[in-house]
Length: 330
Ligand SMILES: NC(=O)c1ccc[n+]([C@@H]2O[C@H](COP(=O)([O-])OP(=O)(O)OC[C@H]3O[C@@H](n4cnc5c(N)ncnc54)[C@H](OP(=O)(O)O)[C@@H]3O)[C@@H](O)[C@H]2O)c1
Image 1 (spheres, helix red, strand yellow):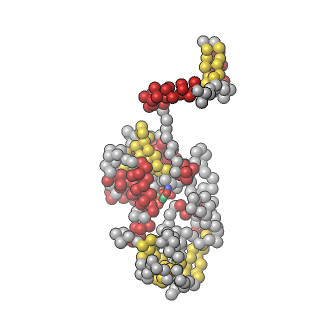
Image 2 (cartoon, helix red, strand yellow; image 1 turned 90 degrees about the vertical axis):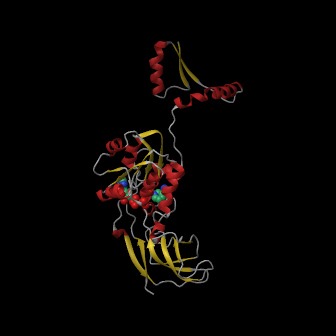
């Protein structure tokens, strides 16, 4: 048996990683003991979240200098002393960046035989595909006729988002950064349109391609493209924050709210305009007058006497000098 080749992290990069941040080492291939499985790697998945592990800020944990790089693999079992797996089984597990991996079977799955070619088990029929499906179908819930905008559109996640949205009857616009990706999106994947964010101002391009607004924005990148998309949302739009390609290679998050905090908490952020809720006025008053009369709700008013003092009271309000609801008694 050949040696086991492994890739270790050598340095923690603070920008776009370069090959010298990694190191190839060779070790002997271990022998499986009772309860263990030895796997020969057939395919290794490389995923953007690994960049977050290298930075030590991904929810799945950190990769430190000297550690072997982590990653999901499709592997063939070459030795097995485990009741559930036999030699020749093709499995998916976190084998890491190495040519052979040892496992006790934890988290190991046999590849569904409908998956062909088998590499798809790591891509559009694996974790990235499920990400697209769950985010689009379950979280965004697009309706036929909706305009769906997706960034990093030619990748495993983005291409599935766009194509599933097309199957659901949506109009789909993709964002990508290379002309060969743009050609593929429209000519092969059936997107209705796309633009290259490196050649065209995203704000103008999104307005041009989504003139009636964006009903679903599936964000894989964050940064300026997220900002531009937010300015063209249609009423009732859904924004799915999935990934942050624009900030993975930096050590410091961008100014303003960090979408990463929303992703980490699986939070829902909703826009509120009270005009949409006037039908609840009677129900609100029925409850709230009782709460005030029973003392369950307290209130403070900041009352200024005389209309002439209204400007001064308003300025005080805007400077934070008020305490409670600002009222002018005329
Ligand atoms: N939330 C989750 O659970 C979850 C799960 C899986 C994946 N994800 C996220 O989904 C996204 C896509 O993943 P993938 O595996 O399908 O990768 P991918 O789309 O194949 O690769 C990432 C693409 O992002 C684009 N990109 C890179 N830097 C960019 C920047 N600064 N601004 C805009 N675009 C940039 C590049 O394409 P261009 O040439 O078009 O720039 C690159 O090809 C990633 O953000 C990933 O972290 C999230």
